[in-house]
Image (cartoon, rainbow, N blue to C red):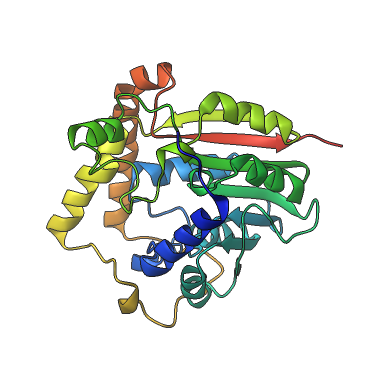
Amino acid sequence: MRKIDPDSHKENQKKLYDQKPLDDIGAGAGYFGFNKPKLIRDLRYAYWVRRLGINRGDTVLDVGCNAGANLEKIRRTYGCTCTGIDLSPRTIAAGKKAYPKINLSVGDVEKLSFADATFDAVISFETFEHVPNPTTMLAECARVVKPGGKILIYTISRNNIFTWHWWQYHLTRGRYGTGALRDHLPELMIPVGEFKSWVRASGARIIGWEYFHSFFTLLHDEVWTHLLASLTGKIKKNYAKQPSVFDTSDTPRLPSARLRLYALWLYCVDILLSILDFPWQLCGQSDGFFALCIKKNE
């Protein structure tokens, strides 16, 4: 595999997300807490966040937070003090307007500007695969979490043979697949075996694991849901159309009865499609994986 220059890669990533920020603040994202899942992925995020065991007043850091929608869900649901960092200044600026009650700043995930043992929990969703030195990032996450604190990670896996994205990539000769913005480099996707050794080296240990988004669940979230949203005219992706003032309540909104019914339907679909994905998971093949880690007491 080709060698990645860390400095130029980070600069390219910053330019990419400044030019094409990932819009995670549309359609009231975060305001409903975890009560308004749209994708199977949302159900899985909620499940693993519950396993963090967060209590009211705890401090939570999101490393690679995007605009902060996941943090806003956690703040409203658990009553935490939430902090997030991201590489893109434009994304952070949008997040500060949308979620004024969480602490957002521009920063390098490989050089966290926090003292040792600052946070009760650290989360990072879909960021490790963007970083030129993921071992350094993991060591930093372990450094800033308190002894006995937990680290929750979801990242893109290099072990992805015969997954939906694998088929997309090979059938289209690389035009489609992981990373709609071409922001995922094959060299930086995370190898499962090495990741587990990185956790041990960081002074933490894995207490929970799940291979996720292998074929049918990923097909649902990326294709079926997109088609459904297009048919119902619910897709909204333009940052410029977002309102300048957002709901700043401390509690989650309750979604409509129609949306609660959809959530129930989504739970049922999740069970069925997860069963169909089991052969891939049995072989350790998936688009990504969740890892719940705990820092060893010093």
